[in-house]
Image 1 (cartoon, rainbow, N blue to C red):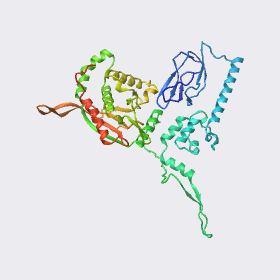
Image 2: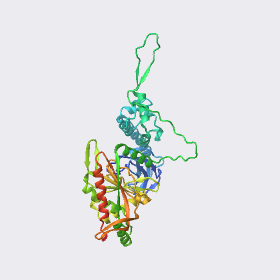
Image 3: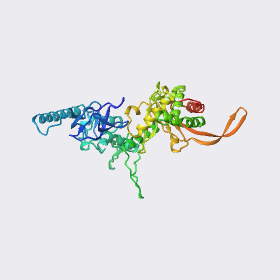
Image 4: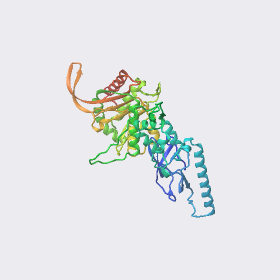
Length: 447
């Protein structure tokens, strides 16, 4: 049994938990272990029925796609307790494992073998350390949770999420300091001056303590990932938010009219979300620059319209499944896709591919009674739209015979965009176009 490919861009997975023990019988497609990627946690089913004979990857190990993780004896065979053949096979397995470990060490970067503490770091950990400019001294101080205290991908990513500019400055000062001995008169004692050549204006971070009653909650893996990505997004993109109040009376009246018939026919409900996504997809066709990303000094305008929708999980965390090619789906198609993704998101049954490839995102904050907000952009996208609560309010209604006051269903939309490539005019026009599509919704539309 090998580590399966769990998404187009997923090249490895971390073993979270084995659901079966050695010697346990396994049915085909029965979950055997839980694996975490940088996108989702998922259960991996058995490729064959049989007996779990050997576990090749421990919990906490980071395993590349295609690498062996377990041995399943098929055809009802089980591993004999002690026979010459089994001993010979075990000896060969040990020899192969030693050979693989030696190859891994030989192919690791030189830093993995020359660090002062003689700790072993996997090529993946070393690659992340190089990208984040983490020194060997700093890496040696990270507490590992892997086998024999080894630093895993999860450990180094957790460290990076808590790493502050002050920490980086402190490390750089310690490594990059130059010792300067100035010329001094003979009657004075020599002094050694330490002059940092990088990380200017370093400030030491003081520990924060709390003397009152408090609960200390350890962030789970998903919350750490969310925290890291939100901080990165605010650091990367200069956010600007535009607000527009939209009259959605036609949509509210239409949904009230069709929702029971739709439930009887399709066996599921219809929410406002597919209508919102339909309006977004139309507006993205009108303003393609909003459906883009930034790479250096280049703007990548996406041809596909893949709309991510933020969904709250029972744990309190947030996940953003993606509706691919939303502009090619009918309103019924969008409704079924929304219900399917939202339902499986709450059960943690989404595939990694269903969480990747988004080109634009939306969040329905109105479900929590919020009227408006300032959503944070999902990188590498350049904009996100939040839909607030729908409320009845008095409003001026224009008629051919004059203006009048009436009760309307109104809602605020909040459009946050990346000011590096989207200026106020474009950001405002896009939000206004979405509002126009919603306000002009056909009250007599069939479904």
